[in-house]
Length: 73
Image (cartoon, rainbow, N blue to C red; front, top):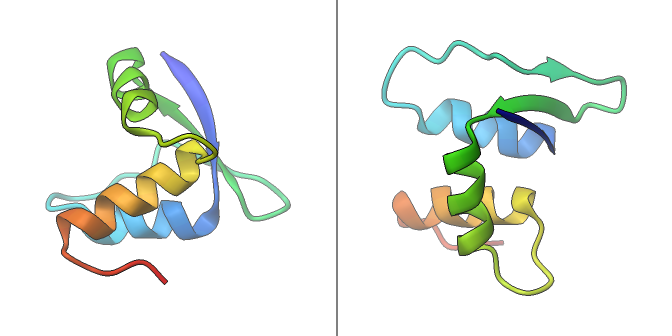
């Protein structure tokens, strides 16, 4: 299991997209970002979906928005 750092926006985006009871496992840092444990396989899939120049944080937001058919800002 790895730990990734994501923005508060990505954390809230994931929480709002959850179709089940969302129980946060991460820890919020002083700057508002989150350290979140993530399974190795999930991280590998995120890395595969990441475009050049895009962060994991960007990828999470893009994929959730795509799944919910929302256009990016």
